[in-house]
Image (tube, rainbow, N blue to C red; front, side, top):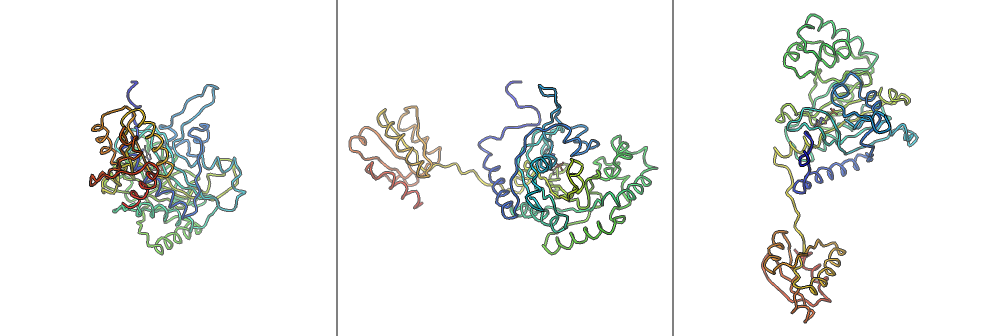
Amino acid sequence: MLTTVPRGTKDILPDTIHEWLYLENKIRTLCALYGFNEIRTPIFEHTELFMRGIGETTDVVEKEMYTFPDRGGRSITLRPENTASVVRAYLQNKLYANGSINKFFYIGSMFRYDKPQAGRYREFHQFGVEAIGEQSPLIDAEVISLGDALLKGLGLKDILLKINSVGCPKCRPVYREKLQAFFKDKFAELCKDCQSRYTRNPLRILDCKNPHCKELAEGAPEITDYLCDDCASHFSELQESLTNLGIDFVLDSHLVRGLDYYTKTAFEFKYLPLGAQSAILGGGRYDGLIEECGGDSTPAVGFATGLERVLLALETQKLLPVQNSACDVFIIALGKKAEQAAIKILQQLRSNNLSALMDYAGRSMKSQMKQANKNGAKYAVIIGDNELATANAIVRNMKDSEQMAVPFAALIDKIIFEVNKQ
Ligand code: AMP
């Protein structure tokens, strides 16, 4: 269909763009306070990057990527997330030479062939941060506290932070075996996906959304009982820091990421009223990813949040800003000569940072006055033959309908004065 967007995508129209800008401004302000610098990477990358950077056994890579050969026969994928691209950019541009820690943030659209529903789209927008180069749990706490500050700063209530540790390639194999032993007798009852996870990625069984798999996972061994000393102390220091920062959290041993390059911290902020789409911000540590992508072993931690979901949460809590598209001045010009005078005044007002509009269709006075009202103009400037003859314009205060004649030479200064007075 020529006249509809592809399924799972949508237009962001001028009547809601102020909500996006509001959110993006909050994000940019916060990232500056926390010392995270913006990075913009291409919307598409070589498919191989995501196969490695997300993991071939994940749902995203197996079922959700927009992958196609380009005209040169290369396999290209629209980015389903941005961490792998940030890591690629970090390595390709040798950003590690900038210092021991690099802190990035990004805002942009991601693409996944997901089942569209409220809060789940095929093109959606993420804000994310990546702190690369530091292993201290203090940076995990900083990343979590940035997420917390964003959600709290927006005024959101009833947000739940869950944290877990998924261990490291040293301690996880023991846990994997315990988990496989636990699910062995239940294998036949697991869903198809979990049956394949059983050998490839058994931790992922714990966060399967299938209700029966959830039941089967009750009483499963908990990874926190199998952490090595390094992972255990990292996790307890993180909890100490979060408590110290006054950030409430709950422990959730079923919060997992199954691949080897995910290490230690995993966390998620949830807004439960969004139901199946309640995960609004998720992240964790990925100390093995940079090496997986061809770099030196480098610790890193980050998160991503879905902007559509944050906006949905803001909407349900009535926290969205109202649109303010009112203009300062609407110029009502009557006749060709007046129009020429008016475009000059428009230009001068705009170069003095006042928003100014006029009608270009030569409509009647009444109709132009209507437009001035519709645009929420604070002042209307009326110029007709009379005004041209006397070199005075009429300035009308749209609120109280008071009018005054102002000489053209003093017009701009007078309007600036009046608008600033309001
Ligand atoms: P992930 O990259 O899967 O860890 O997701 C990070 C965040 O992105 C989630 O917490 C959601 O807020 C958001 N998200 C993921 N997939 C979608 C989607 N299909 N539509 C909208 N938001 C999404």
